[in-house]
Image 1: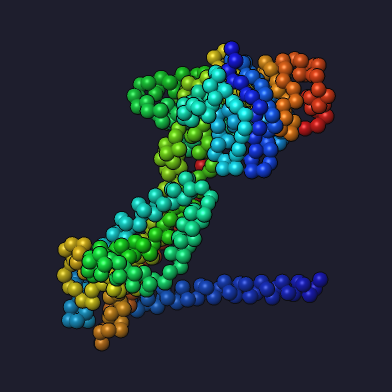
Image 2 (image 1 turned 90 degrees about the horizontal axis):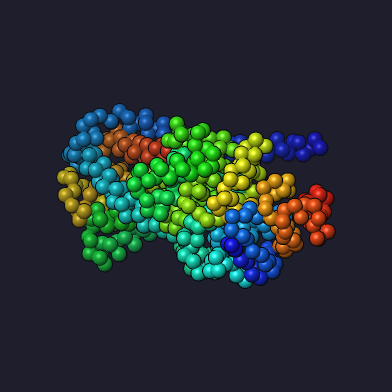
Length: 282
Length: 248
């Protein structure tokens, strides 16, 4: 009896320790980035182009580039992902094809991001002749976040109670009307959450844009979707490893902007989800 | 007039047989009560009539269900469900306003004129004896109503579509006695215009409102007769035992 009690205490201690260990890296990252990056943040830094070989000036083109890339990725991935999720949750019968599709989505989520980059290079840049461009980069990022969007949208759709569907159908609504008027409106917050998580991921990844869009140094803003663009994660990589004598302040300032952007998106996702849970009426 | 004719109905879910060789007729403008212990197949029977069982991928049936001499599988499914309304066991308002709940069925049918919608919603709410209680707050969420009011809202929602038959699936199982009485009153008034099939776990409710009563046990229709006969002199021993509360 005593012995099992002690075992439990030991187990509890290690479980707590492991959990606390998670906090440490997160806390450290945030603290270090804020401490070293915050002094660099001023209006010029976020609104000016990089100057003197990226050693001074701002990071505005990289912010704009990331904004374009993320928007393009969502524009591509959200419609396709949502339609696929609707098909999988509302229409697909449990058969071999469905199982293969679901397996494909799981595997797509597990592909390393650099492989997406190579794939994007082969398909969009070379084969479809888009060149290194915002279009190619957006599509590559879009494919990368598709699994996130499909999976969260499916969960959101499936969490709408079956009884609502039955009520709607029993009133003579067609299946599509039921999805359109009852299922989708109640799944939107969940879908939105997934979309924002996808946005965050697309904003932060370097490897998929490495070969498909990212410009080493491009002080002007892109004019069309066939232009190259700078992007925050790649810019950070460049000034950290490829350009000598960049002030530490600028590197951490860039990291700070990127981190803020991604954390902000996650925060929005969390707020939407919390609001939705409170409003949930069933 | 005969509304429904059911011939040799057998139903399976995967390999489990839920209904066995059921034959019966439902008359127009009657209240047919369906009683029986849980798992006797009575809800399955009800959901066969508006083809709601078809949603279950493992559902399989043989035999025929005819609505006014037409096989229901030959009727467009949306039309069928518009002709056969259903009120579910728990009050299930849609996450919409009171008004929009009732208007839903009319809207999906394509009615857009505000005047017509307003008129039909009022008419349906009056028939369900709810109008007086909600007429000043039609734009509030339906979830703000009490359980009994929600269930009458669901009845109004069903009526608004203009059905011929209304299926009630244990409509009072979550309600207090006063709300139950109101729902029962509504049912008795409604049978002037509609055919009603009432599945209930409450034997007394069947005795109160049913013109005829069907007793199901383990997927079989044991007995179907006038309600007084079922409750006073049933032919089958098992019916007698069930209505006297010997098993449930």
